[in-house]
Structures are given as structure tokens and as C-alpha cells.
Image (tube, rainbow, N blue to C red):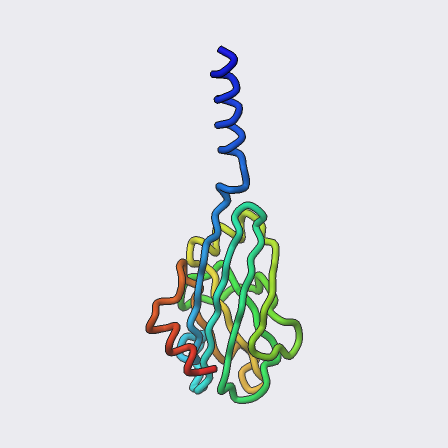
Length: 155
């Protein structure tokens, strides 16, 4: 009987351990035609995100290149489906960010739900495109190989 109680306690502790926390990955590929309204920018960019579901910490890297001028701001926005606009959820890199931008943010449950549900996008603003010059919808999972290689050529 004691052996059964000890086994139950060990199993319960194992199920509650942080080892069962998940890390989820996300990505976005940015360009001018994805902006709303679209821009004619030759700029490109990418974002990679990792969410620790136990701590609710989002870690991200955003890269961009070939903009019409220096970036004046960059943000994650939501909730919004592709083709819709929304407010800022997480600022990226402060004023005048330079590529690459690395950062972290602690998310709320509602923000996590929107992120996982595909309702976030990332964009980079410039003086010539105050509403955003390049944009990409944040998608669940790692970037497909073809996107990753395209993004690498634009750095």
C-alpha cells in the first residue's frame, strides 16, 4: 500500500513538472505587398518567434532589408486576420530599430490565444511608409525551408 502511494506521488510530481512545458515556434515572411494597403517597397524581412508556454515568454528575432529608408518603428500587431489591420501588441526594438532585432516579451493568455490562432502580424515602419512598409502574418511552426533560404538571401 505504501509502495502504491509513493508511486502515485512520483507520477503526480512528474506530470506537474516543468518538463511538460512546451515551446512553440512561429515565423513570418515580410514584404510590401502584404501591407494593408500594399506598398511598392522592395523591402523584405522575416521573423522567428519562440513561445515558452510555461513562462509565457516570447522570444523573437526580426530581420529586414532594402527598405526605402531607416526603420522608424516595428511592431507585432493583433488580433487581425491576413488583410486586416489591428493595434500594436508588442513593440519591437524601440524607436528606430536596426536589423536584426532580438527581444522578449511576456504575453497574456489572450495574446497567446491570438498568436496561436494566427491573428498576429509583424510590420516595419519607415518615414516614407508611416503605416508600415513591409508586413507578414505570423504563422505557427518553423519557416518552411524555401522561405528560410529566401529570407537568408535578403539579409
